[in-house]
Image (cartoon, rainbow, N blue to C red; front, side, top):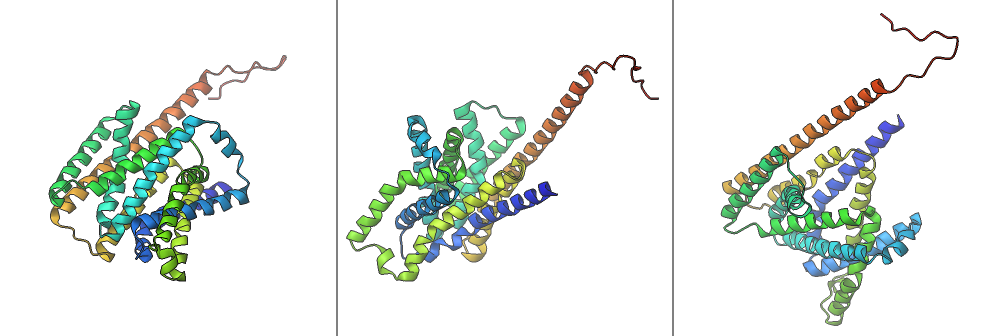
Length: 326
């Protein structure tokens, strides 16, 4: 019963995390007239404050000393911080400038970019279905480039920056809360310096647009950290296959918001491009489930074979050996 409750809690946490990420386009327009860079700087500064309080409550500080003594790990975290800064900044700009649908495409094609980077950078080998999915995704980008009259740069930069961020996170191998703390700490001084510079020039909306606006800018830290905390709770309670499916909730919500709430145009050629992307994701999901099922069967058969080959204990002296039942 406890296991079932844990899985249910993990599933709800995962839905909450990806649901909040999917609904975040509703939040960034509330921060106008602040520009994308000012919003990004506040997001970094207030995120560090929030996670620092969380670490203080949880008393999880020992990793900081270990991290400082590992220059290579610090370098990887710096790269991760830089790439997530690009990702966050471009996403905020996209939402506040009428490109929500194109931004959602970036997170749809992110799994395809991650697979391609695994082949090119890590020497991973793809299964045939994965090759078909990547090829379908490439065709989708071509169709969308024709539809937009240009390559979908917003989608591509978002996808590649987030895939690079994921690669760095994999190499660093830190917990979600700890890694977010380290990344925001790296960017804290530049972000705070930019905000102080804006204030000195009289261009900061934090002090000039009222207390409500200032509170909204400060809440950007919560908007950043809460989904990550929920994601961390889900990651330790539900299978990766389930998380893999849940990750599509965010771009689906963003796509629907872009069309129904922000009323962005979707001519036929864009529908065709998105349809190809969705086909590629269906192929990837089907292949992942098929591979996972095959692996479970192989593990079960290997365990059964090991049990059959295990030597049976000798019966105690004076007792007959057990006979097979017919």
